[in-house]
Image (tube, rainbow, N blue to C red; front, side):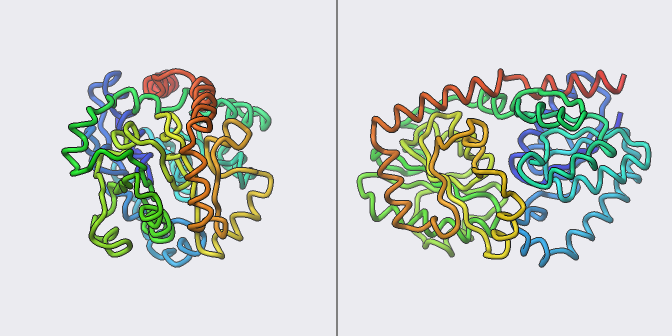
Length: 369
């Protein structure tokens, strides 16, 4: 059986790698080819395109890179046929993946979508496209199952794969961690400025400006796997503390975190770290996005799942140094921290149990046989 997987960012690479491991257990003769990252490659897939060359944030950025995107799309379709794939597994990344799904379906390739596009937030019309192009939809949030059923579409809730990823990571020894990354004994505040260059450029300098305002804490930047340290140096200077490939370890030991909107907000919550969610894009990208998502009141997964403001979101103009300082003071308060952690516990229960990758692999194999 030949599997072709497409993930367009770091979180997709992580979940794709875990799914490959689960599928291998059920089919030792399986072959894997992917668009993803180092983790999927390490899991045994032949890596064709790395996500660091695929991730463009915002409408204006996509328009500027349209020739590259269209070229990648043409290459992907031909590569899918040349590989003679039996199965296509799409992981989020909807702008690209939904186009590949239609092509694969027309050529008789079985199409599975793991980690749904956020059609419940915007562009709900894409549900009709999904119904035509996707054989099986495997969703990771319980409310997504209810959403699709409103369109008479049966989907499978498999649980959130982050629970699998977190279960594999042990809490590091604090002294060892501090020594490894040349940190002192002050409490840590983690800075997670995202994985795309555009968002790092917009967000990191404001995040980093907090380090001089909170001298009793040390601020540590989580460098994205797809980026070089030199890019961060150009934005905030030479002297900053950082970790590479150790974001979960950093969060385990952090008192609080400043986090760019995305999967990282959920990771931070599941590791019980109070956070401020930050988001800033180009003016055009933000205005288009705001109009397309009029009925969505939050941007962070934590607030969306809980259907209320659990973590503060600083968006666009509201994301500035003074507002960030106020919100950081607020989440460092012990009483506020206790209330946040209680809601985080409720959030974790809503996501179900670990084992999403295994359940996803089971659903795929059952359908194929």
